[in-house]
Image (cartoon, rainbow, N blue to C red; front, side, top):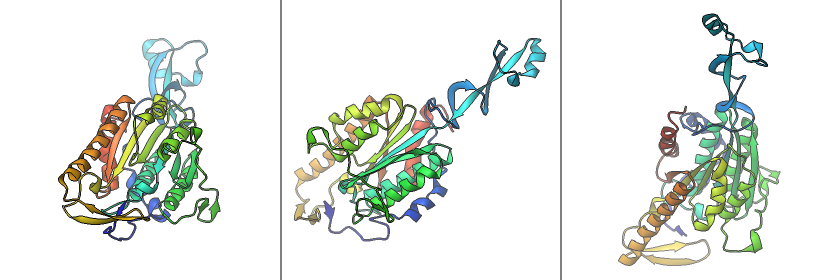
Length: 336
């Protein structure tokens, strides 16, 4: 439901492609380097655990038959009076996936902007930060109408179509299948097993993403996680088994506590009702429901070794992301 008193401000309900592109200047401050060792197979900007010819010197060791003579370490050889070769740690690309929820529940906000706009901005910042570090960026943007899928590609080749899809999905009146006049941007999401209507769109998208993500990836899930429950643990565990997983919880301050006591007209776009916030039991249940929701997300992250970041619609997106990523950086032991 959306409060009838929602302020109408520029860029509050949608975001355009130019704005998402301009966020590149702010993205450089985000610490999204890998928390652990990179397992991807392409050359890139992150140090992997594989040794070979690369950009970063690792160590010298005694020469063995079959070693490449081009790697001879002549200084150590002269000092030790025994042939030594240099070993290097190879730099690898890392696939970065962004799963972005732009569904009806995300098109809500009482401060600054809708949750969907905050999610789109967060995704753009993370995508630019990854691309500028040499990572391949891809994503899955979805709502109730369909989804846009883009497998990780190098540089802006994978990034710009993703940003375009985010801008389109932020417009509630955008037609599925159309992105700036280009067909086939959105397509119907995969059907749930046995067509169970109780399965959320987020769950469907998450299950689909399991089949796309390769080991060694960095995966961001950006959503309000409404309807998220223990049954989502299976696909979350699959994603986190071989990849680094970050949940970005996007929410509005009104979801944390009931508004001041009073009677408020509300609508879901079809029906209208009056919400009586003078009832103490309602106010208590309101706050408790949000606390329980956050506790569930924290427990799921702990169980599946994921990292949780919180984004409020009334706080700067870039600063909130940077602050949320810092604990992840600290656990990595000072990654760049």
